[in-house]
Length: 248
Image (cartoon, rainbow, N blue to C red; front, side):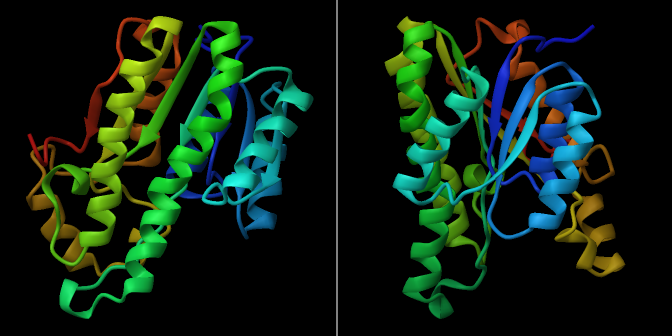
């Protein structure tokens, strides 16, 4: 059963990791997928071909979601190419970790710009077309760090906590137009970034997780699939934590 047949999705930052897993899962369930990347062109084109092989329309766009004008232009290009936008997944994000005493103003500003401003930019860009069709699902990728904080990640935690407040406000503003807005907050997910961690560090993390394992991009993608589909038609303004029970 394909849950997203006939729907079109935009996924930001999808050339690798969690974003790639989300784009793949939405396409597997019948959604046409437009996705963005900033620098990994080879990986993006490989994913584009992979999604097309699933029998859906898919296109990679080089675009920086944290740039307001680029976000507007991207959405216009997708509307022209695909005809509509039913689902937006704001996944693009970075880390610039350091203790507050050593954190530079540039590292704070950059994380807020890429992680939080991009969510504003892209959401603002899709709101009018979604209002016209009186339907839409906006899914913002947060983090458990935005819920409980984390030493050395004051900038990242602030950006992800900001996403939660933003999403709840958008859910209240747009609910009457049948547009839903939710947050998926992943815990420790194994990606290319975590692959560089020492095995002992990984084992220590696993001990803190009740399910005794780290998550996968597919675990996060399944949550996004649910929130993108009509199965979650009466759910908005919520934070769905995907962390194996780490911050229950």
